[in-house]
Amino acid sequence: MATIGFYTLGCKLNYAETDSISRKFTECGFERVAFSDVADYYVVNSCSVTESANKKGRQAIRAAHKRNPQAKIIVVGCYAQLKPQEILQLDGVALVLGVQEKFSITDRVMALEKERLTSHVPEGCVTPIESVESFNSAYSCSERTRSFLKVQDGCNYRCSYCTIPLARGKSRNTTIQELVRQAEEIANRGVKEIVLSGINIGDFGKSTGEKFIDLIRALDAVEGIQRYRISSIEPNLLTSEVIDFVAHSRAFMPHFHIPLQCGCDEVLKLMRRRYTTDFFAKKIAEVHEKIADAFIGMDVMVGSPGEIDEYFQKSYNFIQSLGISFVHVFTYSERENTDALQIKPHIQESVRTERSVRLHSLSEEQLHNFYKKYDGTIRPVLFETKNKEGYQVGFTDNYIKVQAKLPLNAKNKIVPILLSYRNGVMEGILAE
Image (cartoon, rainbow, N blue to C red; front, top):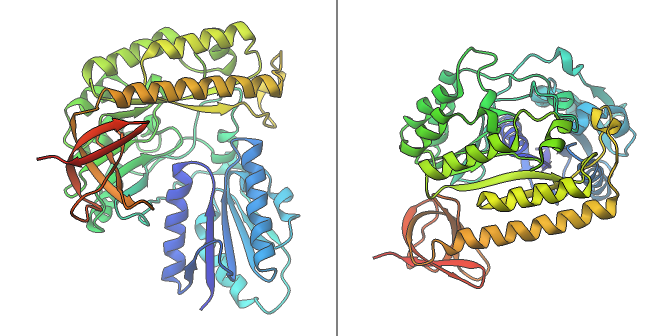
């Protein structure tokens, strides 16, 4: 029996796709092992959102080859789509598969398996992204408590700094009926929570003429799934209808992740984002008004071309004024074939780093303030794991990470917990 290990970089969508691909290998008789083990095959599901992501992909490939020089390494994902020839030069790489080809990976590896004792010329198979039409379904189920369900792929936006449309193609999806079927399949596996994943999930419906609001209404009715989270949704696609539905739904949690990228209108225009700071602020205020306990996270990029000191300070002040819960900070990275390369001035690496540090500190302060509000309250917690200290760890409905020592094994159970916030850690005990 051949063994195979997997390594995933990047977004939740990549993790869903890796898990679906690994299940296909198991069905074909392969034994899945840890990526750190010696294996016959390694699959690296790559990311290319930054140059650092490319570098991590190359490091993973080199580590696998060093572990077993006879192993065949297959690389898929965004880096594979964008830079196949670069990857094919690395030792140990047998296959590089693009967006359209990666879901036929088992057939291609079975062919490699027949050739295992003979020489094989490294092969790249990457369909030009403008020709990619298919949507391949995927969901993860390696964690019994939570599953990432792919509901959409690709993006029709053309933000000036971003290569995702070049790596993932245009926005596309399967039907609501099919996604409900997959959610039912996930529920039958005993999973309690589903995270809706995609590249631009609020744009759901481009392939089928359906709407995102109709998708979440249909999923809310699936028996067995007790929690849904929307992984990330563009502010211009987070409609009042969606907010109202989440506020009153059975299973959609009070939790939003809304990309901002910059809190300065001049930079948002350079980025070709589809909203202003005034629009964004009103959207956050609407969520606060309708869902008082909502956890609101956001993405912010620092150091993008054109972000002079004045514009960064405007952005910092704007973010500070919003009263959100968490900031996921990205540092701008130059990407080939993006219009941002033509925008001046470019920001020095040292300045980018300093701005990242400032925003990380602001994020920690905002998360602390959010957690502090819930000290002494009771919230439902879905427990997922146990840490080294013997605490059971999970998340509240509004995405507060909690650790608790409980008299029962609470994994994959939703339990009412009395919260106690001390020294930056939210602990809890079983509520009476």
